[in-house]
Image (cartoon, rainbow, N blue to C red):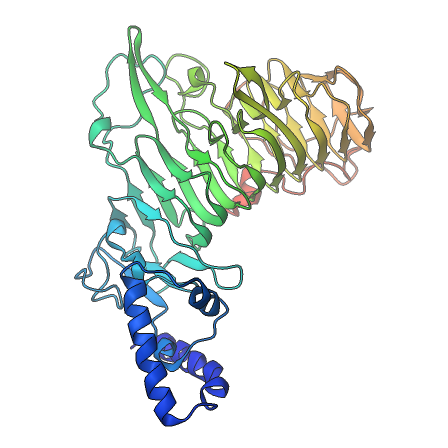
Length: 482
């Protein structure tokens, strides 16, 4: 048994001793055998709601005190029981979820440089608020390189109108991570790009409607989606992330060059609410060979699109970079289509974020929807290559403050109830603040995929406005190669 497992066992035993000492030795023996029978039945699928509640509150009897809470997945394991690196489950679809209880940790072997897995990590079990289930890249030396979940499509997605294509969608896995009926689960790659998800035929990450309180952290999601054949060539399709359920946190994600949107809501009743996207970079970086746009420009590839689900409330984007290479940075809402597809998105917070070089609109509340209570604060909007609007919102019940708008147009058809301390430059339309040059360190108004540096001199007239992060490099803490 590893030292950390011994510590966990000792901790559990200490927690139950005060309760256990109340019983006689003979009672202890009877109850111990009772728990063995109950545990065996639970492994076989029989549920005991009262006992589940007791377990969820971490009240263990001695039989439960020795239960292992750390499990292992490695391509080098012998796939026996997942209780050590030697006996690790050797693929993601080999995890025995019957053994996973609230508070369990599943460590993924990342090899010295990387370790590739070829199956879907499908999660349908739940932790609790105080004892979530954790799925993590190992931090042990020699196993902390990086996890790669490869869907097996083979070739990179086609660019828009590509004449030939050699990928094999039929052989590919549908998703890298699939959550269905799960809650209180944390997935953590432990460092930027610690878990990389690529080449799946539908989406890299899929969160079903019946999920809640899932945290995804330190993931790279790229080149997921399907190739579609039309008379005029091959085209990419499908988003990097499909989003349903509530209470989720997407943190330190890098999502790019998927078939369509970086993040897209599920259709129909998706139960979306209270979603936080933080410290993430949503963009496209692969260039189309003949058009001065991203390779997937024809698929309406937005940063975040919410187009269905009815009334949706509580979307937060914080300390992130949205762009470049996207059709719309965000597009929230949809008028009724075919009698049942629609969304009104309310109580939105966009904070401390850079929106850069959206093709059509940086921030778009879909026209004629009941958007309400949006707060835009400390944003840096680079719309130097944006065709239509930097901000496009047609309801007035919102607040824009401490924000810099550079280029394109501000379209607020019905005005705005509250705005203050903004500045704008070369931006037509509605006046949100002083018309002054923020004096950014580097801005490229020609190349739609170029990265900017939005650092300002201390005497800039906009120095107290905009996002505190000033570039992608600032967000990631590393140089970004193109």
